Image (cartoon, rainbow, N blue to C red; front, side, top):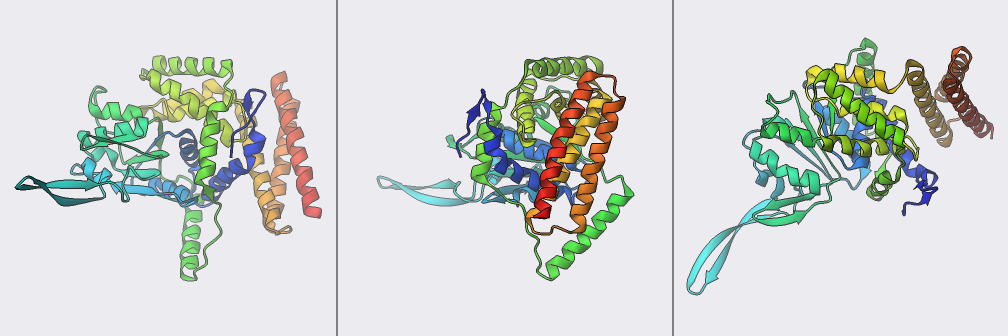
Length: 410
């Protein structure tokens, strides 16, 4: 699909069917991978922005599960997975097989080793998951830099190109570094960093148990639930559309101010490269939300970019959130997101023909709750921009609610 422009911005209306596929995948995975909504969303943003992502956390917090669940919902996706350690070399990553060929030069015969790259290698894959990345040696990590930056890799003095869309790395902990060694340089090349912690809500642990029991039962009975799916061609369409999402000057100025505040208050070095590439993430986030323009609230994703050490993570997150949105703005954004997800879920229930299920009743009740809270915010706020935004959301959600009721009554 060709990306179209309207009023110097990407025409999102033409892209909404594809965007909704992404959103469907996100909601589906959120339905059984609990307390990981932001991580799942950032992984999808990484794919749309053609960036790479690092997942830090102890064993068993769904690092590999999230990436596997996403790539399993992409038709024709190839995922290269490997557990890294100090003995892994670039040949383990880029060579599919090795053979020996005889060469004749006059009366003298010799043998040479031939490395084949036409199999299931890192260079031939669209996605990659490299676990325990910091247990690999520096030379092997360095062999990844060209692939990460340019989608090219070198082997035996020959240059190859790759269609790699996004690389995902995982580690139980960050490497000890003074900031000047190879590990620090490699770490800086990974734009998105997520610190994943064990599930904290006991109720969510119970949901995990029930989900796993249902999955095992379905496996035994060979009952595989329908999955939302994405196509490679559609992903490429969104990737081409991302640079066409409009970024207001105010947002760019806020991003620079935010970077300076994090650097000064927390003494964290943020390279110009990371700052510039953050713009692409903002554009991808807006598009994933179905918008053709970046909003100030999108800057909250900087908390996944601006930290370097897990000790900084909570401080960076708090600073970013407090300096991007006011409490009222944050609540409006949360309501908007919740209402959007409820509308999408209700639309899916109706399209599946299950018009009178408990699900749609709960969804409609949730939408009504969003409307009630928006009215309360509108009445108590003394800031006109907040009142205007609340009214804008009210109008939009009421329209969606009416369309749902009409569809349900047909």
